[in-house]
Length: 127
Image (tube, rainbow, N blue to C red; front, side, top):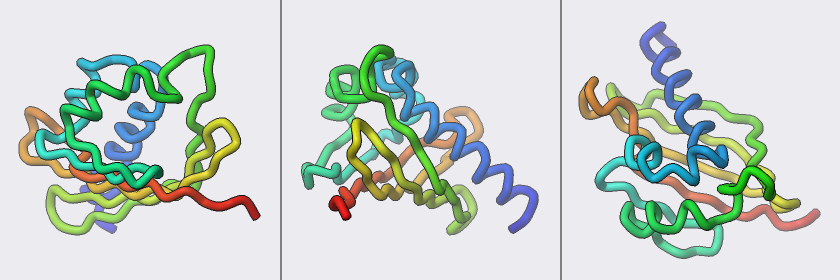
């Protein structure tokens, strides 16, 4: 991977981790900066989310409270698929539930920076 590719992946990982924090989930302003205008998610419940519904729900979802369960991410890796497109895969634990996750981030311009375009979470059944 090129130096540009490595720095893109590192920046996207930092932004993904920010979205997993209580501060990132409870701050609409921060979430608006990190979610692409065309954002779509298929959640672990199977529900399809668009940007407005996600922005409204994030502050009350699990992982948004400092004194509640919080996401723990692991095995995060990224690949540059094309200029301005990064794909991340990782796992999370939240309140004893494990999920495998995949995010596609895109960078349309330097002003808005990297934004999450697509996210999918798949629950991992108990062993």
